[in-house]
Image (cartoon, rainbow, N blue to C red; front, top):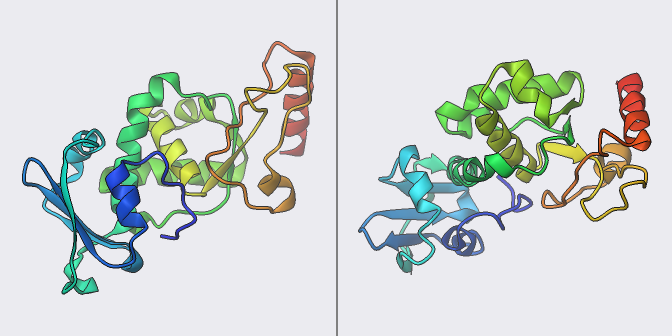
Length: 220
């Protein structure tokens, strides 16, 4: 897991621990804790995946963030990617009903490390990436093609995007509706795009939108 991934959507305690090279322990008001060694890309906790939804809401429940000066990398038994995905998924599951990228076109960039993901997420992540390696696909069509729950697919797609594993093409929400759609520079030139950039597709009702879809289908 690299420092290039987006973390702005994650709880503040994770963001703080992410910026500290030495190991730290985050203690919560209910006596549970998470220990993070960002430099080693590892973490340890007695909490399991089912707890992550409530963890996302603990912005005011962090009792302490303590340095762990005598810890070694082997004390942290889980990959930090697992924690990143667990927190991200639950954040995006809450927002799936208003997901703004549902009509964007998703392009595959790279595979995540499937062995480092929460077990319940691996099938969705693997199937989505496999689909996109064959052809860019509109995000709204992915749940239909895979016959999978829409809210779960959107959450996984957004986590893949935040991790830099897929890119979206389309037009920004602030653009002129009659302007040609904007394409993510990484797709066309190989230039890195930050995952937080917001792309949405051309409206289906516009002539430009229809021509754009025909061009994409012809190139694909």
